[in-house]
Length: 348
Image 1 (spheres, rainbow, N blue to C red):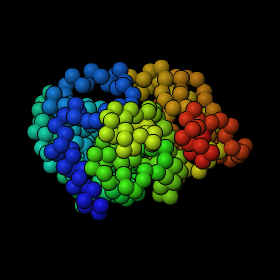
Image 2 (cartoon, rainbow, N blue to C red):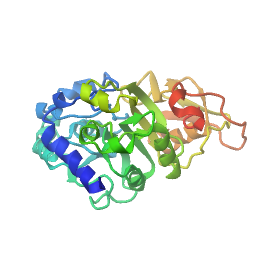
Image 3 (cartoon, rainbow, N blue to C red):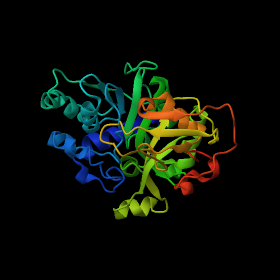
Image 4 (cartoon, rainbow, N blue to C red):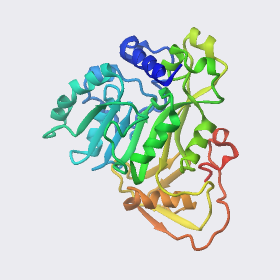
């Protein structure tokens, strides 16, 4: 199938075949971690029709978003955009882009409804129809976005490297990638990659994790951090028969547009969380193996230090040390070693 045919297949599946999340045949697009407690009350302010057409696989809603400009790739009916609207506040901005007309029609239908419910003078959410492989045509300028989020969408793209390249183009220096997606424990056979059912269920287009890591490294982003990961259940006999030999996981990742090394190096640096991020007074998790208790010094590698120092988290940390003295590789490993293997990615 050509890229155009793949896009048309996805548009048909999400615009015509699926009428609600109940129509999905696997847990791939509606799984992963439960929404954090502090975010759950926000769901009560979402329109029921927006929620019913939600097909995400995680909760790619990072903290400390006040005043930020956030881009949501494959926004669908706008569930995450409307949640982000609250999180960035009236001074922030949310841009949602999707190629499926039927999904965007629902999103736009309730744009002003949500602004009124939030008490905003006008909506801070804008929806654009377009392709995530070509954000320039959708009017997204270089270095204009603070954070790019995506929820179970990049696996649907026929050109994932181009999507990831576009993300890094539009991000400001120090900007953040924070998205959830489906990954496979091996490369999907070519005959299954474009099978309409598997593609629509977020399985056929799932990247092999190590290929994702290699693409990110080639694009100048060598340190991708896992936030959470969870196995996906193939709950339909037809799906199981087609692709049951592959194990899938929903994974939420974080990465930054900053110069980093491809291994975690030790410079004797320390980071102390101040407890100042809203709704996280006692601790902050940068990823699945960096848990910062408030006021407790934590040794960190050079990459982690730079992640905290170069982005919006800098004001919430006391960062001690520099890179004048090198002590070798940082002496720790992540709990998700079965996925990161010996690559050194997020090894600290």
